[in-house]
Length: 225
Ligand SMILES: Nc1ncnc2c1ncn2[C@@H]1O[C@H](COP(=O)(O)OP(=O)(O)OP(=O)(O)O)[C@@H](O)[C@H]1O
Ligand SMILES: [Mg+2]
Image (tube, rainbow, N blue to C red):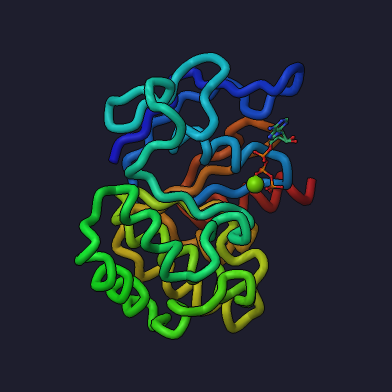
């Protein structure tokens, strides 16, 4: 997957959420870190077309995101609050929804759903009510719903932020074993420390672009300055 930002900027009225940014991303695992309000979620939403640049453009595999109607179908996105991710009451139904929207035949649905739940040892979650799940279970259910659609790229916006140590370890290990291309936004610096490339945002500006540990050190300098 090739993601290209060309002088892409996002403004909300007077407020500049992301200063003009030019960047080419081709790595399989990319981390995004920075202080609250520094523009990380805005940046991530531009990649799947949920946020369109106010000026400049964002190209994904040569296609301009502004030409897409809404979000790009082959980019999975796990939102900062997974509570907002699961739409239907029962986890299986929610996973089925995304599959049906992508034209998966009715007689294939059960196998696909069981397959993705099995991948994470989460078969027991299938028949559960989403609103009764704990934060960690919900995070895993959201991952199943998105990964079932076999996205070319998965963007995870703070996937461990509400989790206890045990669930944090579980989700972190799932993430580190995902073969999919991923972009991980996180305040959990250990999660991205071994990534090849980590972007550090500061006040809507790309302040550093470096291998994991170097980027984490740059972020510490910025955050604690
Ligand atoms: N829809 C919006 N309307 C107005 N301002 C917005 C909107 N979305 C984001 N912003 C502003 O843009 C800036 C960047 O927000 P963004 O959500 O990208 O930050 P973030 O780095 O993801 O922060 P956090 O770590 O808290 O999730 C913030 O100042 C925020 O208030
Ligand atoms: Mg955010």
